[in-house]
Length: 277
Image: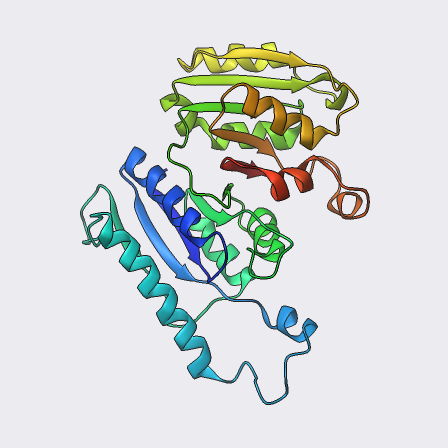
């Protein structure tokens, strides 16, 4: 994870996003690139944007980008992260864009990065937006790490893989291999009532062992708990400081109507969660 994209928007979890990205950057000696993020035009129209205030107001979008740039650069310099110099390697930062980019534009740009760090979406005004999360999950082709509202102090020391045997869980695990190789503890957690057809946890464990990753398999019963709640409760009980989870094993529409593990974890997780579709 040598290249990390950090979209910057003024929301309630932005300091946690920056802290999470920096912890990852220090662990891997990464290049951290900030990018100003703003709502797409359809999102603004949906909120009955006044006619007098339009997307054509370039000064407004430039001010948002300038604020994002200053916030990002201040955090990096206060933590002694050097500005990136072309041709050099190691922990460094840079910033791209002199105007705010929409969700789809950020998701498109994320395709050339190893990982993107976002804030965990919330329902309150000022929380990170679900539109950004879903754009990056479905349009970037890359995994996303969602930072919790409260900034973590460690990331990736004890990792819990939420394994439901699905394609999405397999992809998330593959994307997380750099983190898994450096973790002190790795648990493969299965909630038996919520598995789909696929390889068992023990089979995944054998694959990870061939990569030199010692793992422990933990089987739990559903105990009439919804899947998302069960994964989060058991992750915390195992002392996990990070979860690996496939996103939207059920359809997104079904989860919007009936709820599901991804929706619950995206709204309630207290540790960083790496997700992939």
